[in-house]
Image (cartoon, rainbow, N blue to C red; front, side):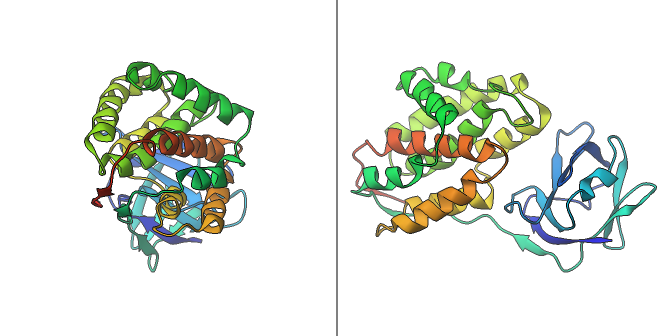
Length: 274
């Protein structure tokens, strides 16, 4: 038996009707028919997530699960029907909760903070940023065309948009102009969610509702510290960039693009919201 380390605040493994959507060496995605909910079982080396359960298990544990298997929680154990090695003890796992948005005053060293993370970006991420900025400031329909762009379970365009929404949410609490732009973008994105895969759509829906993983939240907090700490920004950016083959860096590019875009606005103070 394996054991859960943490459970995201939106994860509901006790709900009936879960089945395996897809499985990999270190991650298993569960789905529920009819309500589009998803739940991720991931290795403990991944960051906490709002709808994720992190598991202490050796590499390859996820291959015990097969697509379509029924998953149920019985007596504190999450198990796959007919698979003994796929049991996960849930008791004692901590609940990961969403941190509040950072709050304070607009920063004066935005350029230096931005430089602390852009060095981690590669050619693909630079292209994403250039493509997004070329469509600014008004054509949010064109920006939302990044939905589904790229290969994999979470295409590069979708990862970029998650990072953009994460940082944009902070600026939307600071002034009318960022808020109007983000609301317009969110509406356009919701209309295009059908253009990407199930897993990526799930993460985009979470982002549109203000839910992000712990690596993104940590970077967001570091970027908005009242006193500059470039070392903490670089560390948080490195942790995010390390996720997946390129997914983390694509998300980081979205963070950088939103910060570059909205930090240019002259806003004197903002109030934090959850």
